[in-house]
Image (cartoon, rainbow, N blue to C red; front, side, top):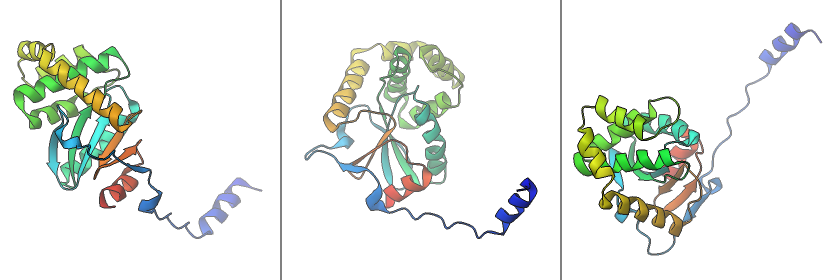
Length: 198
């Protein structure tokens, strides 16, 4: 068949109906009884709207992709996003997570979210040097951040977060906690919005 005729015939076909998503089809797993993610050390919040906690690693490409949609929702005040570090992919991930915790400890959740956004705006691998450059560009005190990142308090926060994630069965990034249920993986913006409403 002639390619132009084939393409023209496709144009005459009715558009396929969009597949309707059903909340029951989403892989949302209840957290173990008595587990409260809101008391996890080092958890930070930013934005307004329905709440979700993202569990991420700075060197997870799927986390980077998911953040584009999450950040757009935050900007439109359609999401209150919690951030929980899960630096499992590289030593650079641990360095960046420690520095984010240091920003949170010294400057609060608004600056910590701006720092998070700045890291995902960079290209390539994210490590301590990339994170320090981002902090310096933001005008933060790099020496104080390094001291805080190397403190026992920040180390204990990261360990406590990892212990918490082990307890609730997180094995991959990104994962999300939505209304005391765990969603593993990024399902796409439409399914994620459905999970927030479910």
